[in-house]
Image 1 (cartoon, rainbow, N blue to C red):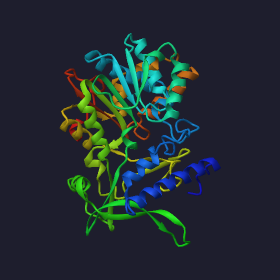
Image 2: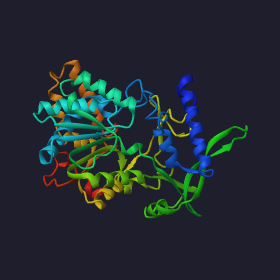
Image 3: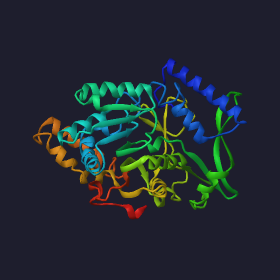
Amino acid sequence: MSALPQPSADALMQSARLLERIEAEIETAGGWISFSRYMELALYAPGLGYYSGGARKFGPGGDFITAPELTPLFGQALAAQVEQVMCASEAEVIEVGAGTGLLAADLLLELEHRGRAPERYGILELSGELRARQFDTLAAKAPHLAGRVHWLDALPDTFCGVVVANEVLDVMPVHLIVSRADGLFERGVVMAQDDAGVRRLCWADTPAQGAVAEAAGALALPAPQQGEYVTELNLAGGAWVSAWAQRLVRGAMILIDYGYPRAEYYLPSRASGTLLCYYRHHAHGDPFLWPGLNDITAFVDFTAVAEAGFAAGLDVQGYTTQAQFLFNCGVLDCLARRGPQESADYIRAARAVQRLTTPQEMGELFKVLALSRGIDTPLLGFARGDRLHTL
């Protein structure tokens, strides 16, 4: 951890306040909380959590860079899929977790270029700081379309159109599951004294119970090879998809994130799980370091997400890599519009597309899943290279 940049004094004070909140919750709960609850507090506690505390998160000055931060070509290609779904449902879009607002601006401008600007573009965003950034981004990049954008505090009662969620599922709170020779456990969080007498956040296991035990038991986890097998269980993701399924009258959900189908997620070699933290573009594995200042993520089990959608009545329309999806949606055609291939703008854009699509970068690790209702036409983003059979 010594290589990590040090937070400012103000940031450390905010983290300390969140730690007090977490400690109080642990005491109220009898001394132990699930990691899912800890992750929820660390990321979303009002005014203190990572996504609600006001710190800059996206871009070179933040903790990580998402695809829309790399290039507008990501949104321009995605617009082709959004347009197709809107034509088969309604001319409305809801983006969940819109980051800096760059994807919203890129989608709106490209859809306008195609003559298909949506009548309404909703952004479901819990962070007040990010809402302000999104407003400023749209005002700067697409001022003539900004009036079509509105912000939501909760899921709509009903919806027809397109739901876009880029890197949303990976930051939903996960339960940590531990499989050992003596049974199945859930790894949670306690406060305990270290050797120096300082009270710290620590891990503590308890026998898995209830819905967690049932869902984890159904996974047929690999036998522990070196004492234990640790992995994640994202029950919140399935519940979120089910909630959308109750509201989606006609349209599709386009879910983009890093992850695997179940057969690849729970490999024997992945015995320590996929949990990662990000701070100032440094990845590390300590979710207890500076609560509220780090992003905490886990890879997505896309089989579980697809099963949740199917069980709730949605059609699983397609599943493929981000690279194949972008190629199917015409990202190279969008690139060709950048002008002469020898121009500096074209070269920068081509490098960004390479990062989005090459297997050693984001092309293979990131996947795209489409869940729909009332859409009979095959979706163009999955016309070639569909991997539904792997789910």
